Image (cartoon, rainbow, N blue to C red; front, side, top):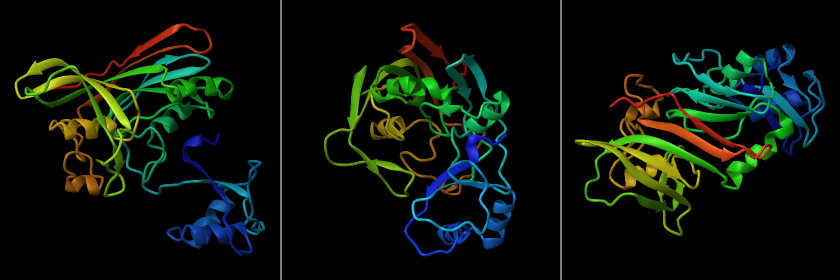
Length: 293
């Protein structure tokens, strides 16, 4: 069975290549022609109808082509996810630290989606939202296309309550609970975010759950869902999340993607609550993971 984790889609751009094969070789020069030829031979390049293409298939502007990303020596991630809930529409998983939700960069099979798709034999599995690779906790999946849009609308229309827990330095000079708003923009390197000028485009309510000397345990209730929102907001308050390799300062090993399994990011997607759009039932899910501190 071909799983959706490794499949990417490309609409062929304007050009004068004689074949799809020639276009892909030019579009992705880091992959040599011999490798592309091997992928075509193994049926790893498909047309819009899902059927394998031959290397002599004529090039056509706008043609939809599916191809399967492959990482020759993908590094195994030694942590397992746990399925907390499964029904005909939804799956809820507890994701460990360091495991990506979706394929990206060097991760194809070592992702939550790939593992669960293989485990359940369900090629229609799709995450309805995502959390960072370094963050642990709850991820909600749609198990069938028929009801997927109804559940995706929960996030788009902000009809779902999310709560995270974080271990961060103490902030005794600030009042809690508090609302933190930032205008977030792309940073440098490309995978970072930073505070910019302008109207706030991110919002989080922050509470203190527990105080232990120099570190506190916080509850973070994001209203918006921007990339690295919680990590950047806590860093700008002067309390960057413990063991964060990106904020407030990017450490060198993070540039090389060298994970320190002994120092996981102290951020956990703790809870999800929403009214089920199909039944009206109140759904509440809570992570079984704990942040050590």
